[in-house]
Image 1 (cartoon, one colour):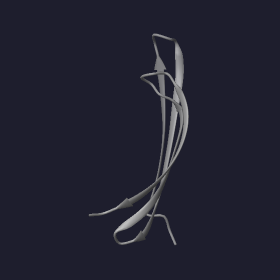
Image 2 (cartoon, one colour; image 1 turned 30 degrees about the vertical axis):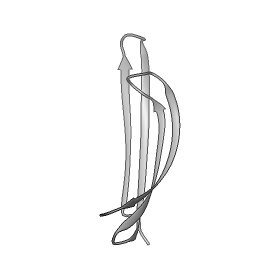
Image 3 (cartoon, one colour; image 1 turned 135 degrees about the vertical axis):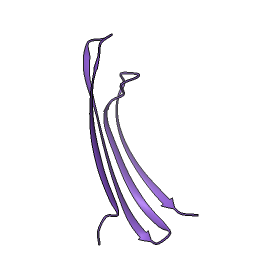
Amino acid sequence: MAFDVAVATARYFHDFKSGKDVSLYDALLKYRLNPYSSVGFEYTNGTDKDTLVYSQKYLIKLLYAQ
């Protein structure tokens, strides 16, 4: 058993208008259930660079090919 896809990103920004340094982290794990479907787990933690709003999100997805 192995994960089909594992991706992680880290982003850092400086907002000159507010003078804040902000960061945003994402992680995605996708596991293939069969040739046509997979389940994915996505995690996001940090501050949105456009709105400067902090959020922490967990998302589980059922993905399938048509």
